[in-house]
Amino acid sequence: MDKDSLQYDQLTGLLGRDSFHHCTRRQFKKYPDETFALMLVDINRLTMINELFGLNEGDKLLKYLGNTLQRVFLGVQGSNCARLQADLFAVSFVYHKEDVEKYISLIESEIKKYSLSLNIDILLSFGIYIVEDKEMEGPLMRDRASLALKSIKGNYIRHYAFYDADMRERVLKEQRITQTMSRALEKKEFLVYFQPKHSLEDGTIIGAEALVRWISPEKGTISPGEFIPIFEENGFIMKLDMYVWEEACRFLREQMDKGNDIVPISVNISRIDLYNPELCSFIKGLVEKYDIPRSKLELEFTESAFMDNPQLLIQTMSALRDYGFTVEIDDFGSGYSSLNMLKDAPVDVLKIDLHFLSKGDNGERADSIMSAIVRMAKMLGMLSIVEGVETQAQIDFLKTIGCTMAQGYYFAKPMPWDEFVEYIISCNAGIEPRDPRLSDSFKSIDPEIFWNETVGGPTGIGVMCDACMLIEDYGDRREVLKVNETYFETFGFPNMDCSELEEHIHRTGNQDELGKFLRDIFETAADGRSNGTGVFTFFKNGEPRDMYARGRLISVRHGRNIYFVVMQDLTNKLNI
Ligand code: C2E
Ligand code: CA
Ligand code: CA
Image 1 (cartoon, helix red, strand yellow):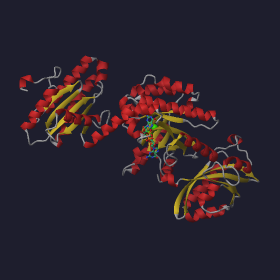
Image 2: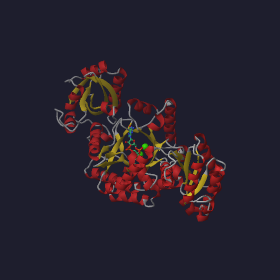
Image 3: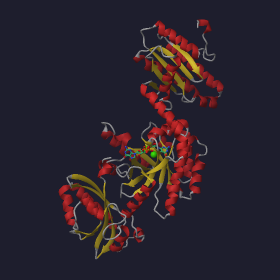
């Protein structure tokens, strides 16, 4: 190809695709000892700019970018600029590590000027391949730069990436996921799991989040972290989310039909769902179809949606909130726009992920940020819930800053439908009064009848899989009236005397924990309406066990309080 037969792109005057490869190869020959880089430059959402401002404006932007590239690379050794297709540009040049970022920031600052004149954010992505083998076919080199580009498309934090060998593996994996997703949905390989949310005031279950799992017969369980980003990229998330929301409603309906207690279930709404014009009518349709109270379906919108399209997010949240749904902001604190957003967004609950704030060396600072967020939420009339809670120390800290709700492995991991039904029953059996008379104003019930109905007989072979006991409080001493089978298994000794138990805890556990355990249970629960909670550690066969106890006053006999106490062994849950 001589100079005259080179093809140029008519719009920008840059080289066309074939000529670009040809010229790049010529530069390779001219500088045989130099390393070269191939960089692709992509304008994000050019189609949207075309639609909003017309094709002419789109063309003007392409010409502007073409000119910018030419100016930035003028005089750079071995460089060639080209437009390969609509919004995709390419530059090849002699590579010096320290220069690449400089080129990128020059290009970005030029484009920013242009953005300001149009009053819209134009974002560019850059994919770079450092040419290892100059004999490689041109299209192959371009594919590699393109893989690097794809790896950061839609990423607001990273604008450029270099090709690395893992990218190929990742792309193949993505392709496999994309090829199998629709059939997997048809074959019901997607299951909805539930993760409970708890009150930090009394430990009761106050709700749950629906989280999807892909259980593939060939590949086993695939975590959402692997497939959700891909589904967000290819749009399949809209279909999957509609399925998850419907499953959540079906769950609520089933529990209501069975006469079980229900707690609100929250579902995730992807930022991509916001672009579905049927979103609001679909969700409204679901609660009508399954005839469930609107207050029982809560909606979690991820904070990052605010960066994408704040107006659309606020509009959608308002519409759904006006209709009676509780609106939550998920992953609060993960993005950059948090405070800005709160000013305008109609939000009921802030959901803060502990991992965004408490990692790193800057623990104290993270703690005060968390405390400020919780206070601020209160001032704005919002509730706050913290997720990702794993340890007792975190629970204690959250209580000190006035946080009232939490979710995390400390309480339970996300679990399948049936297990979750059991979970609610067991939580309620220990905490909520079985006898409705107790919920309004406290009335004694017969401890004997209560025990038989709740735990299932004096031998304790009942529904409760946690250690249970009935304790009578004599003021100066406490007497254990009944315990179940699990109690014996848990504590490993046939103890029918509370003082022995107390002494045992005292000897093996932490004094403060013991104090807290008893104080909480007997003082908080004394009004007959609240649950007393406490934690303590004891040693079984030399191994420490972390116990969580909840108690409730169920009866007053001869002026003495009788408490029902459930103790759960959380040791394994804490070690996950
Ligand atoms: P998310 O909405 O922030 O959900 C919380 C994630 O944290 C869940 O991961 C949950 O299993 C995990 N988690 C809960 N407690 C703890 C803890 O104590 N420690 C740690 N390390 N992790 C904890 P999962 O289920 O893997 O979901 C990851 C993300 O995928 C979710 O983050 C959400 O953004 C997305 N996702 C999951 N299911 C759906 C869905 O049905 N629709 C949409 N659109 N997104 C979903
Ligand atoms: Ca969530
Ligand atoms: Ca979250």
